[in-house]
Image (cartoon, rainbow, N blue to C red; front, side, top):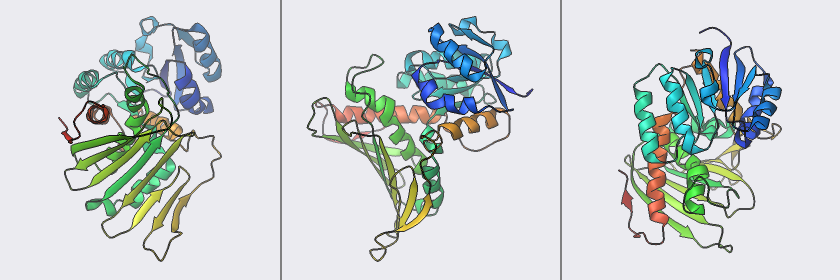
Length: 337
């Protein structure tokens, strides 16, 4: 492939501007944005001015796909899977923001299309796998996770506070947009298949807010406990791995990783720490995930990345959790299909 990688930026709205644009503005010899695609001409022109792209377009049909090597797709889930499928069929590498589709069936179809094109790179934007603290926690617990362990993940955010994308409830909208990150992190830390899902909601003081606890029972005997919701006043992400020898490895925030071996070390031992000087773009993994995407497109990396199979499994787990969280659902655990 001729350098630089010719990029199409599809969807120039809030998601692109807030989370992905800082990386693209840095500039690199490895890639060049060539077209910004958005039905809102003002948005497209704004992103074009910031990235130095050559042109704008209102739809993907207006783009000369033969002039594109790869695309970054940051649009709502409904058109996302359709756009990604169209690009894959033209053998264009795709980075697609999660959840990459509006439903499990749509992701299953996209997975089938991608499976027929193993040489075309399709990456899904589960950025927290690239957050520095969580990567350090993952690396520090390789041996601990070889035996059954207990994983705790908290993922809470104030937004969204209303249904989006045509879904019926705020809970469903939030789980599919934000909570899916927690399910993806659980898969990443404990890849053993989930055999059973438990879930229940906890009462909150505000009827428009919710807090849910979801348990994932893995085939290897491990257990993941996810605490998710929009009841918090601020964004919160943390994770902890409880090893079978009693050790606890924790990332209490996106700034540090601490090891606590026993009650004699209550303060723990810091394994990793960083100051939040990057406005969250690198700390939350947005920059590193795009660096990994570009490197893989240019055949420079064979590292594992979150793909459509991960998105599909995460969606299936969301389905199971939502069935447990509905007031009418039975309290018994359900099995993952």
